[in-house]
Image 1: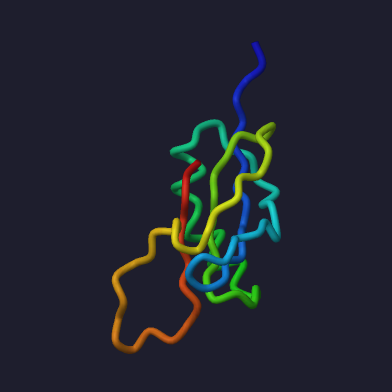
Image 2: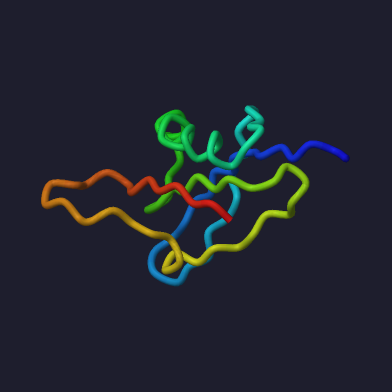
Length: 93
C-alpha cells in the first residue's frame, strides 16, 4: 500500500461567489492532514505577494485533483476594524 502524502495548495479567491483558483503548490509534503494544517499559517505568510482579495491554503492528498472553492465557501476570520490587508485562510478538503 502506498503511503498517503498531503500537499498544500495556495489558492487566490475573489469576492463573494467568485471561484478560487490554485496559484501555487507548496514544495513541502506532509504525512498527515493535521501536519499540513499546522503549517498553513507560515505558508500563507510566505505567499503574501499574491494579489487577490483572499488567499487560502488548502491541504489535499498529493494525488488528488484540485477542488474548486467559491469565495463564499471560505471561512473568514471575524472582521477587525483596522484590518485592511487581504484575508488569509486555511482550508482542508
